[in-house]
Image 1 (cartoon, rainbow, N blue to C red):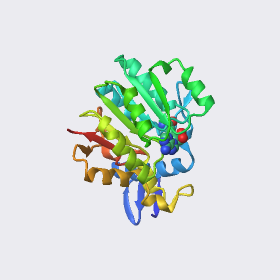
Image 2 (image 1 turned 180 degrees about the vertical axis):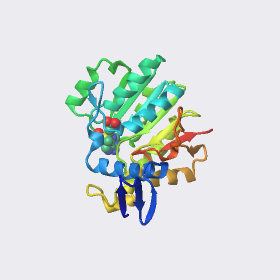
Image 3 (image 1 turned 180 degrees about the horizontal axis):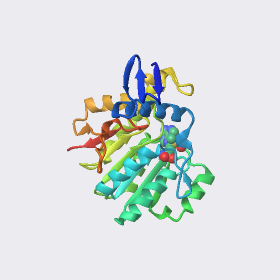
Image 4 (image 1 turned 90 degrees about the vertical axis):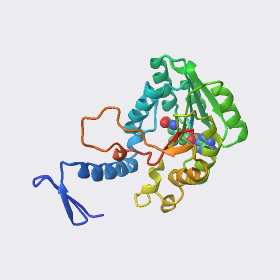
Length: 254
Ligand SMILES: C[S@@+](CC[C@H](N)C(=O)[O-])C[C@H]1O[C@@H](n2cnc3c(N)ncnc32)[C@H](O)[C@@H]1O
């Protein structure tokens, strides 16, 4: 891609085509590039939520917050805990909602200092931690048991983001998702990172988006549906917002 920005003329020229700099198309082009540059610079490794590191693009967290507010899940299951910031984020939202909802976090390894920080956090009482590979049957069963008889269940897949692992997670956890809720296969951005210094050429095929589309072929109970805006006084397109989660939101429709 050849990109030139002229702030005096207020134009953006992409591959020979000139657009207004201050417009929706330029916003989308610049957002896509900003997300890639930010990923390379580990922008998403600079945030905390109530004191715990959370490895997410804040734009994705705000959108997730919108979904959680409207859905009011009584269980949120997430694969991939790391420092626990996302579990604390979900716990803070469910506590504010006040529905007694629980958060279940699964990780192949929870380091002692992370476990100690999560378990001593003021928001920890809504959180259950499960250690094991997310695709092991015993781990999946433990997650089911921890979700208990929750009626509205949201699942977020944020562990190993390679195709086969995500495909197996989709198979293992999708039946937990209640109708009207989602299973979210995060970090499909990998598909766009083949030309980024920290990325890898193999990610073009080996990513969560490929897993999602393969899953959809045999799971008509799910549709790909990125949540729309709940508030919008802009001319922007909800489907073209900056995200690390392209083609991630699978909504259960029956
Ligand atoms: C991107 S981090 C999770 C970030 C966290 N959700 C957050 O928002 O801060 C990915 C985590 O997945 C875990 N992981 C990798 N392979 C896994 C597997 N097979 N099963 C479960 N967890 C796994 C890693 O140990 C790591 O902690």
